[in-house]
Length: 236
Length: 284
Image (cartoon, rainbow over all chains, first blue to last red; front, side):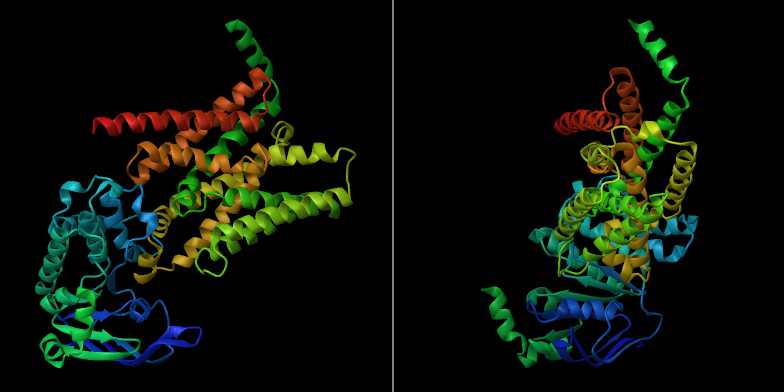
C-alpha cells in the first residue's frame, strides 16, 4: 500500500533540548497507528511536528500521497476556552472547511454540503443547531471529529480522543474511529490507553523517555513484550 | 413633565455637538461589542483596560511633545502594545494576564508622572480625570473627529465582516486552524490591531477606565442567553448600541457623565439577561 507519512530518525525538542529522539516509522494508506507513551515522552511535540507546526531538530518527515502540511485532519485535546464556548454544532463543523476558503470571506455551497454530509455520516445532524457547551463529552468529540473530517478526508490525527469520556462513550468513540478506518481513512491516534491501543490499532509506535522503544504491527508489539511494563503501570 | 422632556431634547438636538456625540457614541458601541465577544472568549477581557492605560500614557507623551494631533503618537503605541500583549498569550514566559497587568499599571504610572513633571495646563487632576473617565470630551468633538471616527469604524466593521469565519475559527481553536494550514497568526495580529483601533476610538467616549466595560458587558450579556456564535455577536451589537443610545439620552436629560451612564445601562442589561437565562434554564 502507498506510504503516506515517513519519519526518518527524527529528533524533537524545545530550545535545543531533545525530548524525543531516534523516531523512525512509516504510515501507509489505511493504517491505524497508535502512538503510545507516558506523559512527558514527547507525544504532543511529535504531533506538532507531524502537523508541520513545529520543525524537528534533526531527521526527516516526508509526507506523500496527498498529505502535505494541512492535509491531516486534526482532533486536538479540548481546551478550557471551548468548555463554555457559545457556538452551534454546525458553525464548528463548518469551520473545518476554512482552509478551503483561502481569502474568500464566506463558505461556498459545496463546503456547506460537505459539512452537512459529514455531520450526517457521524450521526450528529439532529444536534446541528444545539450549542456546543451543552453537549455531552462524547457528542463534543463527535463534533470535533466531524470538523477534522471536513478539513481532510485521507488522514486523521487524534490526540487522546477519549480523555474525560465515560466508559460507554469511550467504547463508542473507539468503534467510530475503527469504522472510519475501515472506510479508508488513515488513523494516527495518540493515547496512553494500552488495552484499547492493542485492541484497535494495526500498528504501534511506543516512545519512552527520550527515544523510541518500538515500532511495528500490533501482533509483533504484543509478542515483543515492550509494552508489558507500560500495561502493568497503567493498570495500577 | 413629558413635554418638558421633549422640549429639552429638541433644544439639545438643535446643537451640532450633540449629534456628533450621538453618532460617535453609537459607532464606538457597535465596534467594541463586535470584538468584545472574541476577546472575552480568548480570555483577554482585561486587554481593554490594559490598552486604554497605554493610550493614556501615550497621550501624556503626546501632550509634552506638543504635537497638534495626539493620534499620531497614541495610535501606533497602542497598536504595538496590543500586538505584544496578544502575542504573549501564546508563549508562557510571562503569561497573558500578568503581561496586561504589568503594561497597564506601568503605562498609567509613567503617564501620570509625565503629566506632573511637564504640566501643560494648570488643572492636572482635571485633565487626568477627563482622560480617565472621558467626562466631557465626547461633547467637544470637532467635525474632523467625527469623520475620523466614521472612517475607523467602517474599517473595523468591514474587517470584522470579511474575516468573520476566520475570527470565529481562531477564537474557538487556534491549534486546529494552524494544523489545517491557515495562517492563524495573521488573524491574531488582525484581532490585535482592530482591538487597538477600537480602544483609541473609545477613549473619546468613555475614557480609559470604562472601555473594558464597553467591551465585555454586551458580550457577557449576550452569552448568557444566546447559543450560537452568530446570534451572540448580533445580540451583543444590538445590546451595545441600545445601551449607548439610552445612556447618551439619559446623560443629556439628567446631566450625568456620558461614559458612566452608558456603562450603568450595560450593567442593567447584564442583570436582566442573567435573570432571563436562569428562567429559561429552569424550564429546560
